[in-house]
Image (cartoon, rainbow, N blue to C red; front, side, top):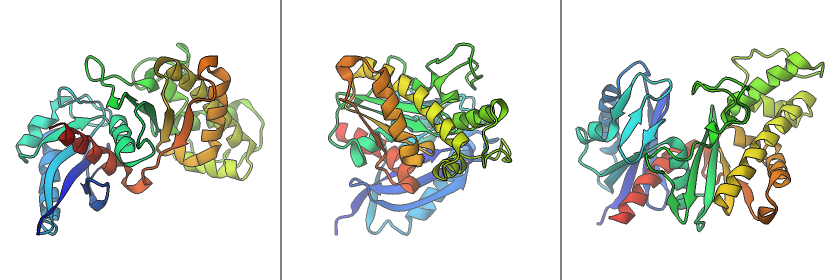
Length: 321
């Protein structure tokens, strides 16, 4: 009996590294994770990871065949196969694809997590059939993957698509990149939390959020308060949407996409963020683009989205061979 081909999708996070076996049709056969142990070097992580992958795959090898490995990781460079000084990981700059060759002979590809999400949406999700679109990931920061004419845009050096680090206000909020006023300091799970605490400090608006600890407050808690009609939480969403909509209107002027897909934790707030963002995008849009660009949520299932995205990367590469 012919075996079903599956790819390994790997998503490297600061806390956990998720992996799974995914069919060409986007079915997740198996998914698991290990602790990343951010203080360790990359080689130590991948040694542990491939021991776990090989051990887990033994129970599937009679029916399935591994054909490739796709990796999504912070600050990954598709062209070079490297990860360059990722935040929250003690790696420095390292060639991940060279490390992986020590543990597997399979073809492998790596890109950053937002680019992996964009390929995942194109192959398995909301961008099926689209050739020009942008995926914006609204997590701890703001990432973006740009697809033009069916191809992911990497640019000359592999780092294209940093919409989260376009500057809204050069004297604005401090960003982890070392500059001030980057979009992700306003439009992200971290950004909306900062907005909430600025509103708490500058207004007298009653709110369920006033007694919350800043370091523990989540985007979901802000969304839950907004759904209950909390005026301060609603104001935070409106402020976030206005800024995001403004910068999305700029992105439309550069790229003229068919759609912008919102992905990640903050996007799970649904129309609390999507509807007002679309409204403000249209308000700030150049006339020739008005009412042409869809703003839609990700169609990748939340729990498996990272693995689907990274596996889609290698499925996409295998089609080129």
